Every structure is written in C-alpha cells, then in structure tokens.
Length: 159
Image (cartoon, rainbow, N blue to C red):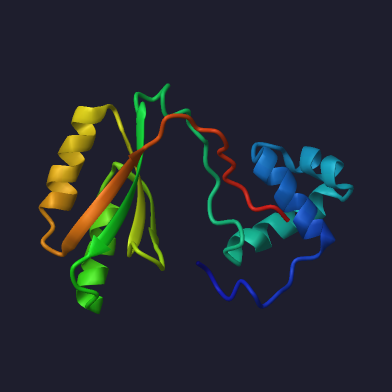
C-alpha cells in the first residue's frame, strides 16, 4: 500500500467517486463526473490521488469462476502446529504463491488461517490438499467446506 492512507480523510466527493468506480471502473472521466456531479478534471485528479494513496488498490475484472472452469470453491480453516514467526511467514508465502488460493486471511479463534480455494473439480482440490496442506509439516489440521451455492458475492467496500 502506498503512503499513509489515513493521512487524508475521504470527503463526500471521494466517496461518491469510489462508489461509482466500484460499480463500473470502466467509466470515462466525463461519465464519472456526470455520475458524481463534478468536473472531469476534478475526478481525474482525485482518482489519481486515490490510487497514489493506496485507497484504490487495483482496477480488475471480476470473472465468473464457473465460466473460467473453476467449478469448485472451498473454504479451508487451517490450524498451524507452531506459531513461530518464521513458520507463519513461510505459510503466508506458500499461500500467496498458490494459484488455487484466491483469498487467505490470518484470523483469531479456532483456526489460524482461513483460505479460499478455487479449482476445477474434486480431483484438483485433492491435489491441492496433498501438495499444499498435507505436505506442510507445520499444518496441524485443516477443515474444508465445499461451497454449494454462492448466495452473495460483493467485493466492494460500502462507503
């Protein structure tokens, strides 16, 4: 993340811009300005600042997992054997490098990490568990939950 994202509070126009971009980040600056009742030049300056400050982290396309051949999504709770900092860092690196892992969270509670895995099918998930989980000597245990239905998926921050 760039700079200190808390140094400058978001004003109402920033919030309107961010909400509009979360709905459609392909808007031209003229279209964005029209939606948020501002000028295109002002929107351009603000969007540039929001990106530089790390408030806008990325501009991405959301892809339908099933259309891309990833019909199985699993949420995996992982409990580590040791909570030594070097081993935690190694686990984080492993999850970041795993192409099947779309999200990884270090959490409190019964699990140490919650990982979201997207793969083609059960066989691919079994391969993932063998190569990334069972093979890791610092994983005490894991519990998998296979997603049956995506009831809500809204990757936006409400402002």
